[in-house]
Amino acid sequence: MAEGSPRRDLYEHLARVGKALGNGTRLQLLELLVQSPRGVVELAEVAGLNVTTASAGLQALKSAGLVATERDGTTIRYRVADPAVAALYGQLLAVAASNVADVDAAARRYLGPDDTEHIDREELLRRAEAGEVVVLDVRPGAEYAAGHIPGALSIPLDELTERIGELPPDLDVVAYCRGTYCTFSHDAVRFLTAEGRRALRLADGMLEWKIAGYPSVSSASSAR
Image (cartoon, rainbow, N blue to C red):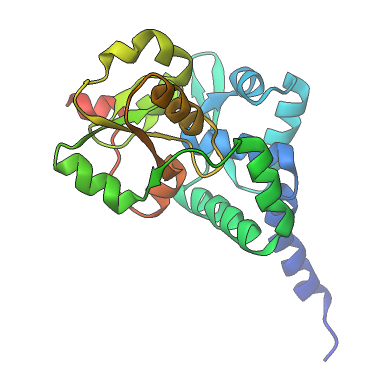
């Protein structure tokens, strides 16, 4: 049976989500928004983009219903529209890693040599609950404040050299950051190991932690 216009229209609307995700710059912006809401200027700075490019990418994501806006004083802040968007982004990463051969090679070039030991989420929880490790969040402070693993200590990667003394000397360190393709935890473990500390990293990161339904807290909720 020939396809009618209403059916084509339906699939064109569905395809808007795929089109919005089909761009590397927009994926970078979405990855950052999964961590915490941000204004366009801050997003541009963190992503290494000019404001015009970042704004255009955000508008494309918003048009597809993937991000929403909220006003914070005079600043318009962008956020993911709902948790399903983070889950969709995580699934996109997983499918690409499993089915696109170039992803593995590109990830190795970006993340550096496979020279850091890692553990999975269940092992991190077991060791943290047993008091065997200190969990270290090396993302920027705003991302930690928006949501972090319960009990994690926040020391952003760019502050780790100066603040290494805050880590308990008698515990192993497990560092984590944004997700599977975040370099911060790799770099933190390399630095700590060079300083003589026993350090590991979470195999993925906060994105996958949330998607899997593990507990997380914001700074505001942890203070209550």
